[in-house]
Image (cartoon, rainbow, N blue to C red; front, side, top):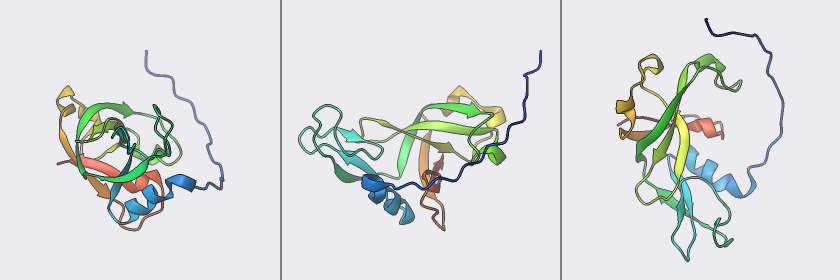
Length: 144
């Protein structure tokens, strides 16, 4: 049986403040990848996080490397309105040296129709949108 396909309209206008995460998005505009770190324990998040999940203490911004390693990935055949024109596309969890958590991002420069487990452990590097839109899609990773 072939996969069932349906057609669906998907659109929404939404005003959103990045609040405490604003430095992360400002960093993306300058090609700087920021994570969060608990000053006392050193636990480092590869994504914006205002407070440590263990201590509840406020975290500090820390610059993470623009290079990482693919920890896991999936090929997406459907996505949000932003990604529909790119289907199928690859989402990856990227691991960074010095970070305790992973970062979910698009993996570009690979063929989603030729996915292979060889991608796990692959070195990747961040690329940034030249004219930032201040969105999570301003950064993605490519084989590197």
